[in-house]
Image (cartoon, rainbow, N blue to C red; front, side, top):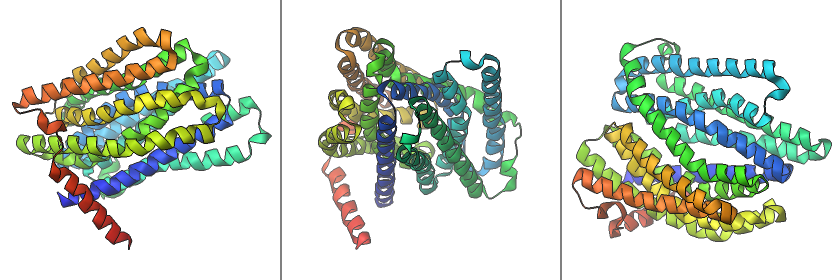
Length: 438
């Protein structure tokens, strides 16, 4: 347990750094562009996330297969290379062809979203393989690289913004975003093949066993991931469709609040391999412990965020984005419960090997979110969207808890009733970290 907590603590710090960079990037790009242009960029990013997330389900199969049977990694990676890189190249070819044929008739928001997708798929695939190998440290480096590259490039553009027109600034925003994704993908792929230490892992080959796993497990996981991505972005799409001038403000509220989701996800990253490989009884115990710790860590991070982030928005984004503060305050509590709910979903997907369970789990949350958005957004705007999102996450966590207890014939208290030994682990870890820093 001590090793788990130590690894989680350092992963937590890494996630905090990633979140800080993401927030900084949002500030830089928001100040660089007008409200409407920044909203267009955020729309492109959100649209690209859906097909990328869908393909991430197939990448998730290879991560799952590696965690279950690491001795077969050559076969797993060769099939993964063939499928993931093959699909990425085909999609890139179609995108370039459409741009050549349609040119000015192709909406720039969709064009840039499509251009980012194949590189984002490769990036996601690399991180999933690192996760499957249990290379948490390398995974942390890989995750931080893309936002770090974007920060560097965005800083250069912002410092020279007076040389560019508004249209040029938006074009540069898209360009540096794509460049950062490409850089992250290249680094991650190289890191994976260094971990494998076998040149055969570079090859693209068909293997019937892994192909069946790709289709059977990967397809269901892809559908589950897509439903989850839609759930995350339903409220933003409602806002961008009904109130396009407010989309940039709501995007800032979402970006700022999801810092919490990024940081609290450190525990899920650390226990992925052990939850997947462990026995059913051990996995239940791990799920209960990690869900409680996720709730604790989320609350610990959320409290200072309630004070700090509104100040960050008003100070660094500027007065024209001040409308993001109230939606942020409403979104934050919901993400505490969403973070914990993700652990229960991971149990269903990785321990039970049943992405079908996670489809209905994510689907319930997405349905509740959409229904509440229909009721609230037209009347209350971005405040209503934030309320719909938070309500859906709280209700969904209650449903997940009920399902987990009934499915495993145990008390639901283990998922949320914090125990003294849970808090003791935090004080113990802080002492160890303090001694290392001395």
